[in-house]
Image (tube, rainbow, N blue to C red):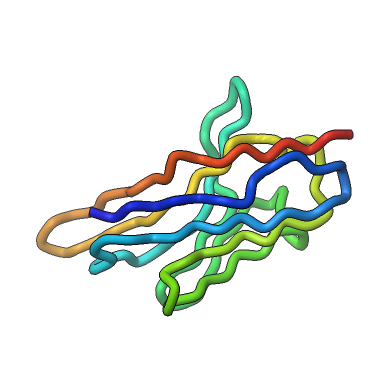
Length: 120
């Protein structure tokens, strides 16, 4: 099992910045990617940005150049630095850890989410 705890959400004006953190505990064996997804009211959950164990990243076009993912392997923590925030970035942001073990298949772990609200 992997437990994920997010922090850092809040209310910010358009153009402002926030940094989200996601601390992992438990067994991280087989975790090949960690990252962030978000879900706005009435919309499906969507990928924001993820980082793999090989440090490659994948991100949504809408956050390109504004959001940056990073990780601290010692602290088992992943960060999402969000700059130039827009009202359309308003959503609940969920931390994700993706486990893939050849003999056991894959599984996604999720945090409870943290609210990010960007006012215009």
